[in-house]
Length: 569
Ligand code: 9G3
Image: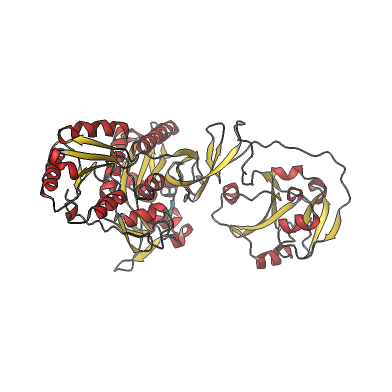
């Protein structure tokens, strides 16, 4: 392809509003352009990468008997009202009315739509299992789109849905999907981890996330430094070595703690360890007040709270709500003599606290020598804390470490969450009606461009793995005014194209420096420069990733490329 025929608007400088290197470089290298917050055009080079990724995905999906199809993005809101998600996803759903004033949404995902399709067209267990997938634009009205393609309001997703008549079949498809996703990420050269994910809002049981390590990753990934345990921090657990203390309980005493707003303030004022404090927080859980108590040096894990109550909404109570319900100000909330209308749940770790400290529900006052059994009720104990670096891994081997990750895929065992709410049933072998058992599986396709750029780009620009690069080779005549160079470059371009290479030929009348800078930005894996030695039919071959440069005679180029491509995937 002639570069003069493509639109590749490269930029010399970093655009000011791009914080992530992937966002900077995709803009500077002329791959994407924003047309509104979170909405991007994929220019020719980006679109070629997307198509290459989609081809790999389709190959791997076909290998596990998943059938590709395509659904509308404009969906009748009624389906979402029936499943109950029209309200729960509220502001994130793009909602609009058609000319007849009927409610529609732009599809953020398609569980309901696929369930409805199967409900209407599959009646017998004999027709199952079925796995259907699409690669399609999704719409989510993100409150704060950021980092370019990493969190957009329109993005391309692979979303697959499986339909089974029993759990064994779902388990098999789920395993096949997991390995298909791993093949896909390996083939596109992405470093990633398979981790235990939160299936909370999706209902169902297991879920696994695929996370690509990156500094801009929004997820905190917890992993053991000595086993393959890895989980999203919201799901992470640790081995709890419970050290129940054996000390005499001392007399409960009220003490002054003026101007203390936080656990840190109290531990500093009283010169005590924060692990000696019963940190008490009030949450509104589906609008009901619940007090959650964790050890003072730990954080509440709100996803675990949400999953424990199977709640839609979990929000910290406001100061107003706390005043009304507890009669106290932030900073002096505690569990002692709290009215019975407030459920109290506590993390297991607070059992280790003897003669501890807790807010007295009286501004500027705390109790000391607080002992849970004697001084306050706990309706239920559980695992409600966020793990911390240094905790022992739940499998007992290694200690936990944190890293940042980009969620690039997520697979769910949905069970009958959607088939029940939408009444998608089949007749089983005994002629009895039963809800279909489902799974859903997704990859953020456009997000992959950013994840790969995050992991591979350098200060000069993008670096694409061969498997998904827009072109295999960049052929550049150093001096466009030199006929010998132009002729040889053209011949190489034609010969390589005829041999099946995808070649980008820089036929522009630009200065050499500009062409090389653009070539580094664009990031094709191999560059062939036709320069001063064109007379002797000698060219320079350079690997973008390693910078490795060798000279080759024109008639050796092809097998040089084959050798070089072998060494660099
Ligand atoms: C919504 C909105 C945002 C959402 C969802 C629904 C995330 C939603 C989770 C999923 C689950 C799987 C199929 C492919 C794999 C992921 N954000 N999720 O359901 F209405 Cl506004 O999308 N879907």
